[in-house]
Image: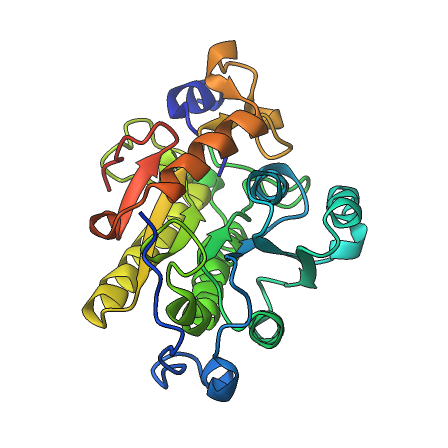
Length: 302
């Protein structure tokens, strides 16, 4: 999420490891829909395959752009509710027709997530990187960050939790078999990576200002869910590292209503933030599994 500088916001409102080509089949411990097609689990591409969930605009779209531009062999799967409506994705598809695949994925509909996983499996056979980039903070006439407990509403809590926490962990669930097959093959990493965009305001230890109950708690939930997945992957010795990333306060539609008191030097461009986050992803190690990093590589307390 594009929300660093918590103080400003809240003050204003109150060497390559090549894995064996004979991969393990999809595990029955993962989702039934994903594991049902284990016969399709062989690797079909020598290059890495990355998936960006929430790719229609903002940070997600910038991830897609930089992933395609930084590697002339890698493939990218970009998902969002309605890819046909994204001008940015259409432009990238024109430029990288053979390396960019667009898929519809609605975080609130699990069968949509399952369908995306099936499509990736049929086309590529594996994944090496999953970036969960979607999230909500405010929706006009529907959702606004709370400045007081008495402004808290159940509907806001449930909607924010569904988009910011439930959806992303279900994506991880259904992409897990593909990530397990892929590992670090075709990349310069030793493992596959799951990187979910969180926010510093989701840190309990760093919460000194209060407010923003729905958004804060949804990101805290995302942190816990991702950490719990990371523990399971490590226990099962799956070649997957899960991390959470705080991108800073980025100049996007999400943060625009809350930029008034953000110092100019603390308001990052999408290009700068994504470049920093990709550097963290590219250099992640096995012992980083389950950690929460800020854009500058510093760990954030839970």
